[in-house]
Image (tube, rainbow over all chains, first blue to last red; front, side, top):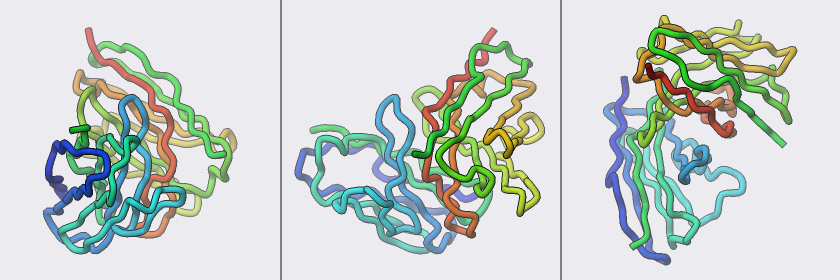
Length: 107
Length: 124
């Protein structure tokens, strides 16, 4: 199975901060990497697919990059509604594994 | 508007069975692969399994943790997805999400719509 390791697992930041979350894959997965956002008590929401393609309706302050084994999710200017947990997921092989999550909290 | 609504959750004893359903609307259900994802209390997301569409013979994939115990099926005429869970263990306790797979293309099969989730508790 492909393991995905997110760093950090917990992030404390202020509104307006630039935030970067990293997802590392245990083997190369091309750009078959997705990012989701989950708020407490809610279902996850798709943010980015194919490593860098923004899902329709997602604010442009979110961006993704990377290929192979290292990927990043960047929020250019953190907004109050962005405080949530973020997960990466690989679509290269079965099982379709997720990272352990990165919780972004208010500083 | 795409909607996915799960039902059938609840409390079950270890070793018991439960069948989850997911009612879909707002899109051509028969075209899409459908998956189940679960989340144990306070934990991260775990992919459970997939059922492909008729064009792909309704073939399935499962996580190792549920293979042989869980079965995914669908009824395209009813726009419904099912998860039959047998030999349940306490570690199967989780919120179960029904998810739509955006595309059948390799590497582009991300989850673009999620149900609200349904809680399954396995406890004596």
